[in-house]
Image (cartoon, rainbow, N blue to C red; front, top):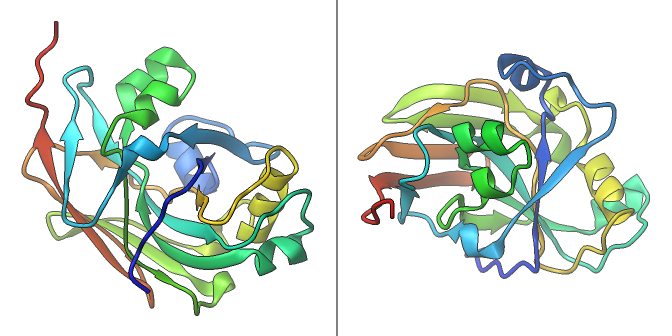
Length: 211
């Protein structure tokens, strides 16, 4: 299905792959670590990820995106699985230096163009056997599967729905495998989910200078 996502919110999961938590020097959380990206960060396939002038270290994070299909609140894992409309490719682009400086994730994760997603939503999938790859300029940087996740996708949805109501069209970024790394202008970034598709975006420097 062609991707048309108009989420009321984009809920992201941090450190949901143990190896990724370790590569950044973090502990694996005891419960899902959630944060938000603004819908204004959404970027379609083929469009440019813009490196903001405020950051000296922008990184890719290849992720499995989950699109919610039904209003969901206080769901059990079984109810959470049933609430999934489909899956898609997502890149949780991060200004790593700002994330570390601020402690809170909002600025480092929230710039315009920092949530590429697509190229479409796949409604037929094997949730427990999805594999994901991240490439930059044709070279593999990230590989993982849903089996590597600390918390399964239904567990994530159930947890999020205990905090906030999920609406149809809401988007969940389920965490990234190890191998995150820097992006610079003219890079070509790919996020591939086997059986779903490949999201491709270019990178460009911001035309806005610091004031």
